Image 1 (cartoon, rainbow, N blue to C red):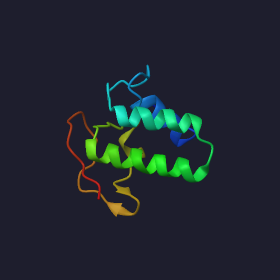
Image 2 (image 1 turned 180 degrees about the vertical axis):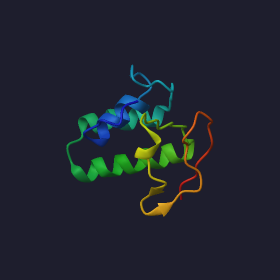
Image 3 (image 1 turned 30 degrees about the vertical axis):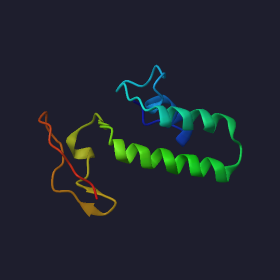
Image 4 (image 1 turned 60 degrees about the vertical axis):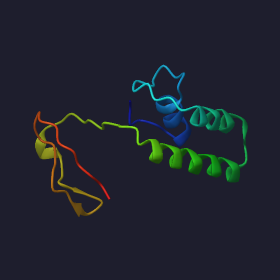
Length: 101
């Protein structure tokens, strides 16, 4: 998965559409597929926002695991995200769980 997306649609279509070659997690949900297909057809911003909201709710319910990895020297990383101090920051090869509110 790449972080270099220019819009929400590309991100969703690549990573959560069941037939996408870039769906490396093998995520599959027919409702999400149908909503992504719907987004390809609809041009109204209002209808698009409704579809994005539904997809967000479905993904939050399904809670697919997405690992965000970034290579670099440890001194490049901050232990704060959105001005909130993190208790656990992954700086070594061991894996820990970080929960965001």
